[in-house]
Length: 533
Image (tube, rainbow, N blue to C red; front, side, top):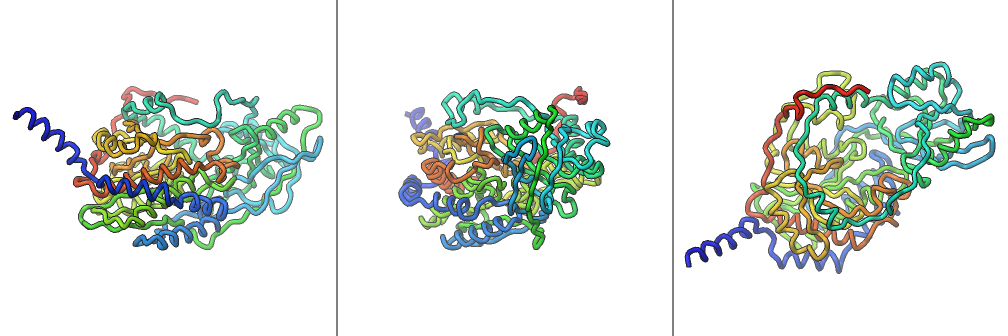
């Protein structure tokens, strides 16, 4: 009987090692999250009522106030706004673009974020002068004075080969569960840094040449516009107004420029800068833990958005899910072993600035920059290139961070972010939700959102896998990112799984396994040569 007893002991010990929330608690989360959900009301207020939440805009200030009050209403503790240096606020009052010759035509357009107003109507002819790098400037010197400059290379358009709306199949999910070895290319990093401040150099060139404004083509067809821009720093506002025009309208202008009836344009960009407070604010709230020495668990999503529409899928959806998970756990009166902290990040769209500020304030720092040219660049481009990493006093306190920022789709699993030791734990925690479609623990890392800088210093940060729906195909950052593209059943499911994962991590006897503190890696290819443009 000894072999049988030994085997039984192993079977019993395995779940015990990962023992976390009690099954009855998970059922209570399911009941509250599906039968008494408030996630769609939260999402509707952030989108229909407040609208697009550009960092440091009046709309974002309203969102900062409202979300704090909701956390307080639900009984959370230590609700606060934690500030960090950002720059100017910016908002759109009114904008329009019109072709006045060879015929009159209203165009679909949006001002590029943080570009200045036109101060009335600019009326001028156009020059199609594509510019992607500094060496392109020489082609157009002496040819742009008094013109509106179209700076994107015209193309012939595209027709989609796949349906814009998609849910992940079993095959899609299986492809994600493939470990990818880290890759480090000093040559690629150096090449990217050389191009990082191109927009600023182009603005200076156009101003010097006497251009009146510039226009770029939308990067999606279908009449969609976006308006992203990154010149938010105090003292670094562009000199010229910039507009983005729908791809179909842009191509028409470019074609007409080749005829004997070149177009005339009228541009109006009535925008405002907001300099009352150059700090942006992350919103934080907590469910206190029983054991102050056990550290804390964290969930986050970014509250800021672009303003071509209402920032629904990106990322009122994730923010509403994080808030709903907080509401569910607070309503159930849980008293977890570890504190559960909820974060609504700011400045994510500019460079993950809110979560980066949190990392530097609470977790770890990197060696400072000394090169003035690099100091001027966006931190997203330079921060991960600085060594060594110095852990702060709170480095080990954060046991795990869970992020949601891929639209309105239901959760289908979680990325282990290369932390292979966490894979079996997550599989056990997701098991109750297999019938809801959440089955996959993918070893591969994912990037582009607020867990990135935590992972970059060795803190366990995880991003959920979500059904894409129409997020990447047409909604992300675009002029149709409104409440209509949110799926209530998906967001309720995501809220339930988020709350469950948080409670499991907060109650687990041992902290989740960590990766080692990162050190400067050796080049993956020690014989790499720089790639010339």
